[in-house]
Image 1 (cartoon, one colour):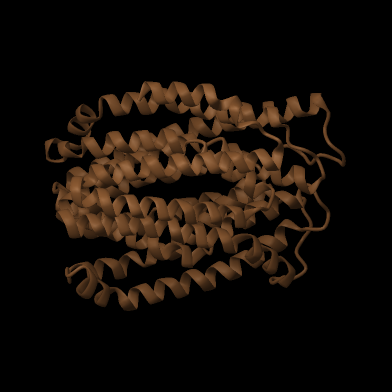
Image 2 (image 1 turned 45 degrees about the horizontal axis):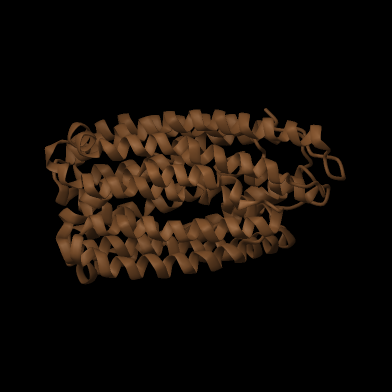
Length: 454
């Protein structure tokens, strides 16, 4: 069950770095395989929901509900799962922390924050639907969707603990089981309840992670020291200091998604929002594949830092090259055949979404190095730097969207993503160079190949 053990003092030699790289790439490959399975299940679920709803306007309403959940979701978790991953990983490389203390304290915080956030959304759902969206029928749907805030928050905490324990294989299994469970849920709930059934899928689905993940965590913690108390103020302080800038960053990113969807609705109606959501769904799925290597990377860097071991620049170069060369053929194929894929998978009523999908595949390629670069920076504990980069990203994408969306609709939203992520990737790689003496020019070849291909 256990991941790699802690490094004992000092910087590992060349042989140790090779072993670390091998373990990292093996874990990443295994998790990437599980992500492929998850992608397949999520694609099937997305297609099932779109076909059962059978209307881009209805699908656009679902997109608006999901983007609203995305906007308030950060208040429920405060980006604590990332802090939990880091501190649990540090506890495996240092004797000054206990994993159980981190877990118990984070559970107490998340129950309070997610419960409060869900209650506020439920109470304000009617006013939000009537005054902002001028669609009163959204009120009851938003109220029901608020329950997903609690279930998703607990599920994200469970996954962060598994990641911090470096149980990457089990992390992949839990995610795959969760994605598989969404398919029968969609078949059962949508025919019976329509759009409300799609909302219920979002509410119920995280329970699969909570159930199976709790078993994995319990086994992973076997043999570790017990916690002295349910609440540890020292751990709470560290969690909040690490997670606060990430919370603000997440708020910026989901705010951008919400703003883009709202702008699409106001300028082109629910149909434009539905078209962009198709491309955004595929973007999210494929970006999760390129993010696979970041999953073991952040806890590994955290553990090495806590045990005073170094991170090899060669390791980072190999990581970024692998990400780019893995992403290129997938995104290029989907982009080239985007019209045919949309027609085949989603049906003729969604065929006009192919242009947004093409743009979002280019965005996946440009953004592919962002999760790994962010994982390294988080591993070094420099989360305030991530916030600064995200502020720049938000300003860039909002400015471009305000210009492009009124002119070319969903296609313009996709172009805004491509340009903004290109700027973000360049800045993050430059900062990783300062932290770990990584040379960004080592990935210039794959970047040029990607640019020429598109």
